[in-house]
Length: 336
Image 1 (spheres, one colour):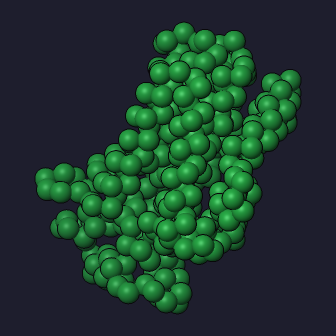
Image 2 (cartoon, helix red, strand yellow):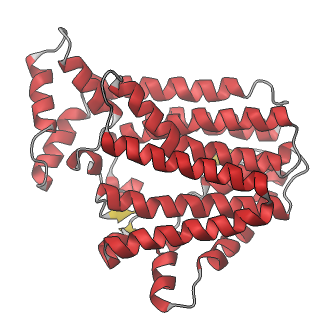
Image 3 (tube, one colour):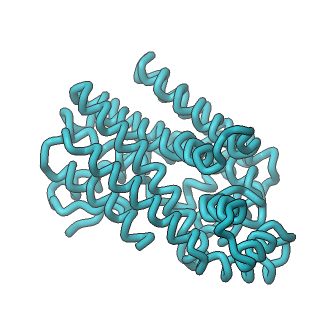
């Protein structure tokens, strides 16, 4: 089996090789899209792209285009747009979360400061918008709506739920906006600009919504159970910065119920304590990772992954559908 990306394993050798070649071109186009004549700006804008990544979003765009007429110039442009949008959001996310590492390298704000990191993210959003304009008004609408959802997701995460909103449901909506919206747009643009029928476009967009939530819930589990040197992220950053994640929200829900034990309440007190020291953070992660709320989060990730697979029922059997199913199954495997 040839693997174009660890995220999307493909058993069809011909399709895998074709997409691998297209991804090489996308990588070159991304490099061109982020370059800048100003030396400092060029260095900052290339920082995260040079650090690598799975390139899941552009690969999804290219793959889904096979449900229509296949890859063309518009599909390639869309693939660059979704990755630029993703990269831009990472610059902002790392500032918001005070994350010191991204993809195994220092975050941009650690190197150049918050202002440069934020403005670099803005610059990449602008570059993505310029490219989107080449595709026409429908693409501009899709990208603008996605950008709005990205911002709303970040705002809702920052502000938190207000009564009588359920904190867990509020968090799911945050994940849908912050993560799933761009995956849905990636699939939608790939299908649309390859001329796939409207029902196919709607189906793959729904798949993206479900798989995006599953992906982020899986990350909540992995952040507590995997070595940060493997993931390329600083383990426990959300815990330290008091950013809500599903395991913590479920722990709060449990402690507010009559089923809570003294051990549950003690763990929540630890989660809410000062975690600025590495020792305190490590101790909290060690206790939280073995608590049942992590298994409950894992189960929710599985439910969304299965919903993503079910959403693909209208798509004809073939290598594209197989790859999409295997990706959702891979999410199951990474948290199993």
